[in-house]
Length: 277
Picture 1 (cartoon, rainbow, N blue to C red):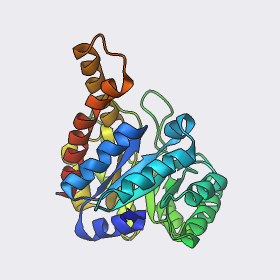
Picture 2: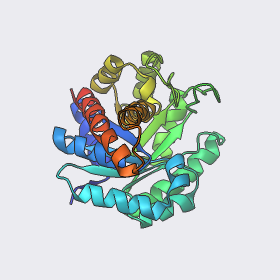
Picture 3: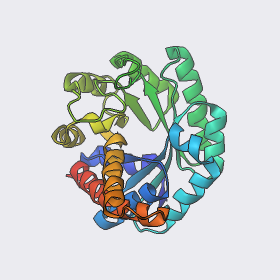
Picture 4: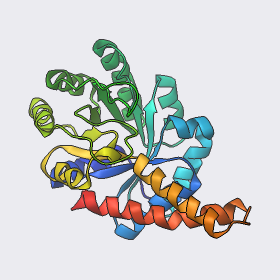
């Protein structure tokens, strides 16, 4: 069995100067591809079920899929609820076998964010799971603007909530379709100094961060987790379009979706190695 908590993979990353990708999963094909990439590289991976995935597939079904995949390989696999919005959602996920839950209180006033995140962290820790929180607000490409993370608020948030990882807003945005986002490395250093480098930091919207900067941040800062979604969805889309072009008369979904797995696995393996350098 290789199910791992977020803390079990991020604390070694923090000590050794590398990062673990949180791969955003939307279904069986991508989740299996990411797990196989982790097995191929011998590196830990975080499988993430975000709000879009949960809207499409019931949480118990996602949990069963993640558990099966984790138990089929020899590397650590974290079963992570991404952007949970309530204590009850976190409770349900933990009950279904998720080993890590993120409570996203980033749109709440700081005091309320701390209060609710603390409750989720206590719930997770009591069950032997991990908790990720967010302070500041990571915006969306073409959508809601970010609110940068204040270093002193980050220090207070980490201290009072007891989270195992903390997502920060330092120039990163969700759903960016091309690398080119600017991570403010001075802001990262200021947050690291305020928190004394004791808590692993998380970058949401990692697809928009250039690969060389992702690797540098993993080596030189407490950023130990980068969420990657859009980049891999683009790989899936390109592979599916090729399958449709190459097989214009095909209608069997298994024959059309099958060719998407190898490209996604190859891209995931590249990212895994990139962050482990």
